[in-house]
Length: 153
Image (cartoon, rainbow, N blue to C red; front, side, top):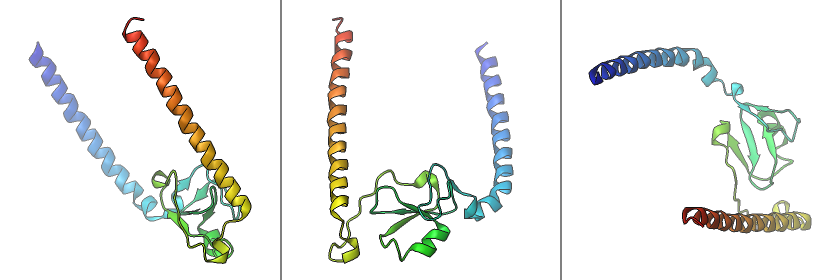
């Protein structure tokens, strides 16, 4: 009985492998033109701060200094002299960073953060610290509850 199950399983795996390889070849052929054109890449839930297009198609340029500032290809080319911070070019949304830490030369006048920027940064850091403290507290509560149940109390 066990050998019959093994034979069926081996045959199913062999068939699935054939189907997978066929689908993979078909997808590679149909996607060659898609892959070669970066304009087919979609950065969902991201709005260009230049032309306000959403979502951004093609390359996305994320400001490494400002919290939430992005350009599309054409706006990066047009407005790079207006918004002088360094940008990170993101070709694929799945490789976009969650957080960026950027250190710039503060002796360059256009890079000196305004007082409001400093206040906003302090608020953000304080909020992050509070959130981490809350997470630590809730982790301790969860662990205490888990221990209580496992010990039968």
